Length: 102
Image (cartoon, rainbow, N blue to C red):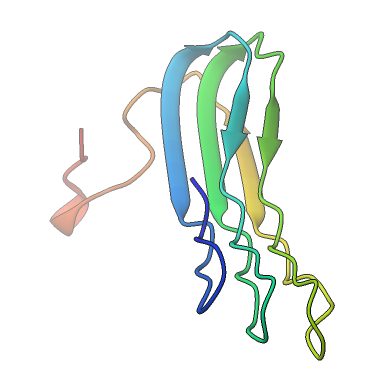
């Protein structure tokens, strides 16, 4: 997921993963959009990963987008990466009056 390219770049969006076993490889990306004209790049997105066990060997990226055009030659801010090791499935949130959400 990228926040777009060129004018009016967006943020990287959000990715929420919940798994008993988080395994494999590859790349999980929520990067902000980059630009080559006189506009501002987008900020990095959010990635939340909750699991009981993990053997994931890939990468997670929440980088802010960049700009290579004056006057905005700086990168936007990075996003947030959150990982939670939890043996409890489906207990991450509670609903109205304490009713658990599945």
